Length: 290
Image (cartoon, rainbow, N blue to C red; front, side):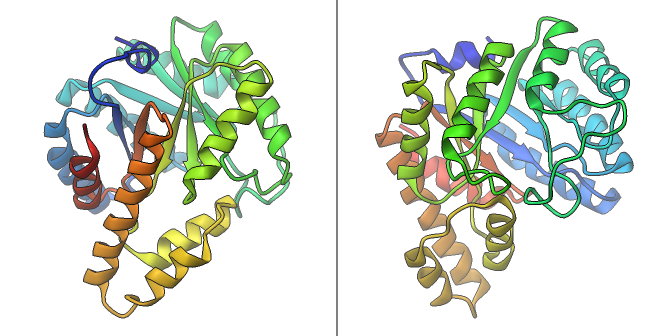
C-alpha cells in the first residue's frame, strides 16, 4: 500500500509516521540507528530522513534512507529539495531512489542558508520551486509524492491564502499527500485544511508534530519556520526551564494534548519529527493511538 492508500483507510488506527534527522558524522548516525531500533517495533506506516543541507549530509541522508528501506522492511520515503542542486543532480537522486526500490518521495523547495525568511534564489540550472520538483519526480517514475504544507503562514510571504494556492498547484502537478511544518495550535491545522478545501483541493494533509525535549531548540526551530508559539505554551515551558527532566515531561504532555486535539478534529494521522530521539515520540503515540 502507498501512503495515499493508507490515508484512504476508513478503519483502524490513524496513520503514524516518523522522520529522522540527517546525521553529521558517525556518532550522529549511531544515535539515529538507536532511535530507529526503538521506534521500528511500533510499526510506523512510513519512515523518512530529512534531506541534508549540504553535499556530505545529502550523501549520508541518501545512504541512511536506502539502509532504512533494506534493513527495516518499513515503507521508506526519500526526501529531496531544490537547494544547491541542478535539475540534472535532482534527477540523478530520484533515479537512485528508484533503483533502490524507493517509490515514495517527499519533494520540497527547501530554504536558503539562513532560514525560510531569506529570499529564495534558484541554484544555477536548478528548479524554481516545489511544484517544478513534483513535476520532475512524477516524470521519472510511478512515485507516490508528498509535499509540505504550512499551518502558520510561510515566513517569507506571510500569506496563508497564497500558501493554500501553492499547495493546490503541487497537488495538480502530481502530489498525493502533504505533511505540515511544525506548529503548536491545533486550530491552525483545521484552518489550513479549510483554506485548501475551499479552493477545490482534496489533498490529504498529515499534521507534523515535533515533540518538545529541549525547549530552547524547539523554540529556535519555531522562530526559523514561522510557527506561532502560544504564550500559554511558553509559560508552561518557562515554569520547568531549569530542570531538563521536567521539560521533557511537560513536552510529552503538550504533545499528547496537541495530538489528541488534532485527531478529534479529523486529522488522518500524525507525523513525528523525532530529532533522532525516540522516547518522546513513543510516549506520545502510545498515549493517543486508538
